[in-house]
Image (cartoon, rainbow, N blue to C red; front, side, top):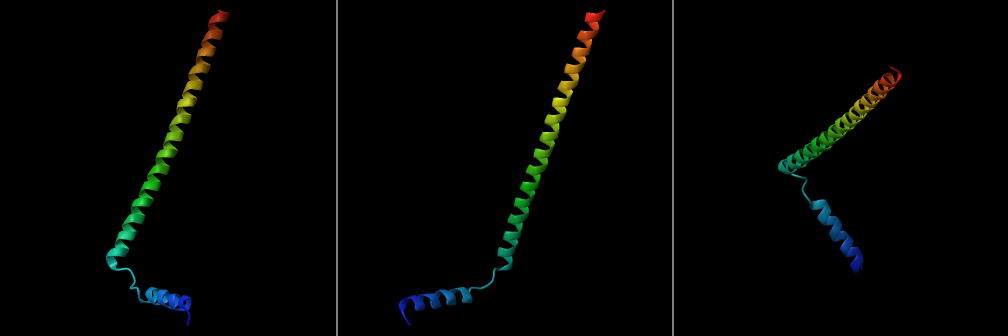
Length: 78
């Protein structure tokens, strides 16, 4: 065997002899995943309501503008 083959066998042995994650490690991974999912969902909901609020504010501005135009037109014809 040459040096490269010996190195590959050693790497494979290290991988094969590793123990699976402990219960605590799995619990940490699960906790981090849940926290990340919560942050992403919260950001999505906040973005949705921010968009809705902006559109409602724009609509209210259009209604006020239309009402002002109608009032001006009515006052000019009187």
